[in-house]
Length: 70
Image: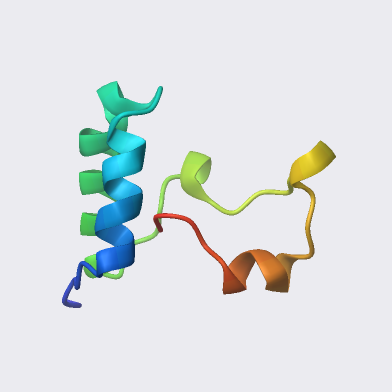
């Protein structure tokens, strides 16, 4: 089992997202994802990395360098 460290960046991003439009599901979804990652279990297909389109399009290595909450 891996240990989870909450950095100041994570805390700031979490606080911002908890006031956003996904606040109703944030706690349950985040708990499920973090638990799976900590136990080295595979994520659900809807949480896998996916291609972005439009204004959000960026090369994959660039997106990995600057991830959001996860």
